[in-house]
Length: 112
Length: 110
Image (cartoon, rainbow over all chains, first blue to last red; front, side, top):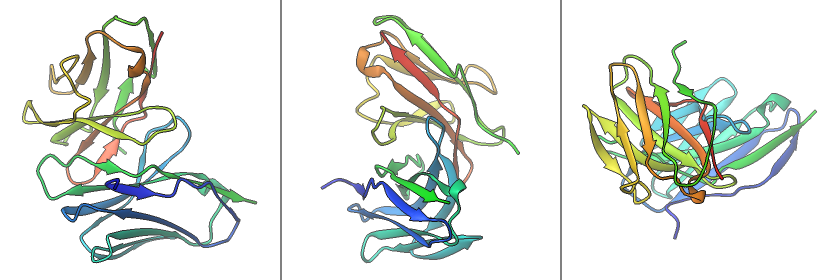
């Protein structure tokens, strides 16, 4: 079983739709959970950062972590064409090194 | 807004040659990382660096790889004898709390 699994998509939605992106993981030691956005041939850009379980909201973005199910989600409300990108989940155990384990990434296309 | 920078943006080299990829982390960050992303694949951890020494490295980071922080601002990744399979995007990252990534160096080994 892979440490972090993420459906690669592609996911295509109309402008204004609510988008749900998800990752599952197998390592119960993961404590920090992140979502990054990556445009083609660019570096990952941090969107959301959460510690342990719960929800976090930032503008149109909401991150959810359910540690009991080993499942994390990113919701995008009122999606825009500029949201079209690859979304990467990443997670890290509680350790000083802070190395991130990434999912495969989900490619999202928001059509005008 | 401070950001991680990387040079060069694209490096082409012949198999067997040495390459040095350079990064300038965000100035008040304490932890530094290198990751790579082979085209179409996931981002993979290579190495983490803290207090002037490697704190963790992956199986990919073999004896052909080395990292250095030669001064107070630069952080470098050296690949001693490049192989075709080293062709990838290489990302530098730094963190105080959250981890921020640079734009990457695309390495092409011919």
